[in-house]
Image (cartoon, rainbow, N blue to C red; front, top):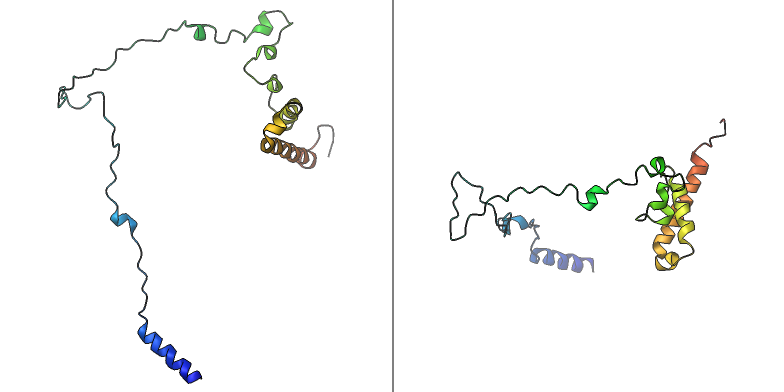
Length: 161
């Protein structure tokens, strides 16, 4: 039986052509890359004379027109910077931050854990946990990580260790 298998295997080896691997060079078949295709220069900047090369008129550089430095947005910029110094002490800068979320008003940003706890406390009563469950889970996991890190890796300010 072994003679028969040897005979068949040698016959097949003689019949099957050897496979040679050829690397596929995909960059050889590609065309040259045209850069800035479709971009047309609006301003004519080449040469000393104006060469339009066609029926299009020459478009000069636009005339400089300075912005209005006393527009309402620029004039009122920083109007509340010294409200606690110049005004009455009843109002604080943190009370007039209207474009900042309520939980973020007056936060110095020194301690990420305190900021996240304040955020969680403000958002837990609303629709945030149900509307954004992934973000809520990430917020809780970050709080847990920072809580463990602060308790294990940092020293308290009172201890003398």
